[in-house]
Image (cartoon, helix red, strand yellow):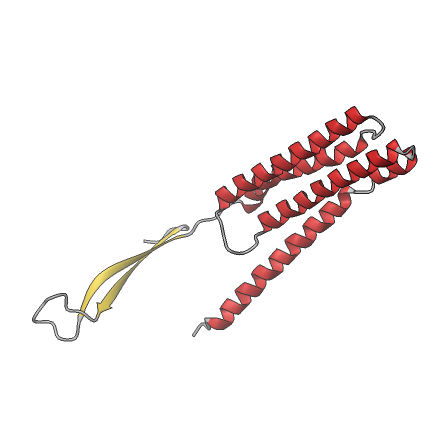
Amino acid sequence: MENQRIKIEQTTIKYDSTFGDPAGKDGSSYAGATATISITRDAMSLFYKLHIGVYIAFCITVLAFFMEASSEDIVSGRIGLIVAMLFASILNAQTAESTVGQTSELTLIETIHSATYCYIFIAILITLRSRYLSAKGKDDLAKKQLLSIHPVSFHLLRDKCVAYHISSIMNRAASKAKQCPIS
């Protein structure tokens, strides 16, 4: 029986054992079947579903840089917003990991989330530094520092992570092909 997704093959399986049959001498053979089911999934859709939360958290963190650093109330609200985005990113990472499963290697999901954690931590540091500069009367320098973390750099880092993981997958596949030659 053959279908686009399901393939069933009849085979004969030979065993070294006679399974208690005194008439058997060289083992025994039994009929068997091998079923192969091909599964495809929309990987891009899954990728976006797993990462949309971390991208939104990153974008909201970037939006926090447009808030003035001259008032303590605004700065405390901005820090609260950035910390909330850190927790949202951590929650998104746990959800993505539970969907995909844990591995012993650093996955693309973990790399993207780790890059986001680093950016959020840098955002907190820049926010505190800009508040310090604003309190010292250096408002112009504080505004420049607020916009110093640019969203483009995050996307460049993310794209580099994606390229690294794709190349490592290709290298692993090539090494497995070398280990298992087809005859």
